[in-house]
Image: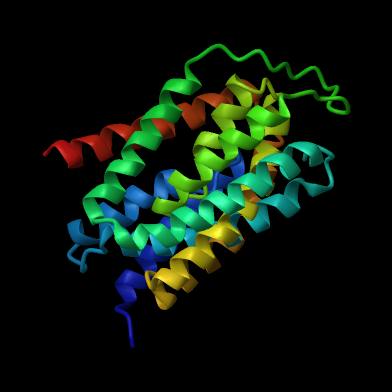
Length: 261
């Protein structure tokens, strides 16, 4: 099945922009690409994707974007193995359940789930953060039971929208678990990669993955995510947090306007 060249370019551009930002702020990119895929193609005259299809494309793309970004951070010693283990196990179980279970939900229910998730993430980013970036990343303590429980819940709801949950995992790590910002960003990529395995398998089993569109987004991700991760190492931590807040808020406003109208 041939795709129009214009749509191929558009999908590549959406994938590139979203994945570069994803590598910079430690998210899978769906916080940006979900609304872009949902709204931009029909505005430019292309056939609109359903919420189910957007979630499926996002799930596959996030898998590769986070894998590429994670390798860029791997040598810096910023990925906390305990954090990844406790949150990763819980989130992959939850994300599979959400990813497969989404086949039983309507498009409006999926969009509403996404909007609520994004709103929670936006609110959390404004709460005071006590995790300090003092350069001592070797002995980070956190509540393991809380981390496991929250990761499981994030996995279920983010699996529904194919987002893998990084855009809410980062605020949870910063605000509740008090993890230093750079460790939270690097570790979230590893956790999101693990989560995306469950989400992607669930979406494929549910029959909502468009192969051609997904491949284009993946190619863009493999190029852009490592570039974003390299840029983040040279940027101020506070600036990274404000970029994440701005992206989440913009998405929240757009999604809620779409739902309410």
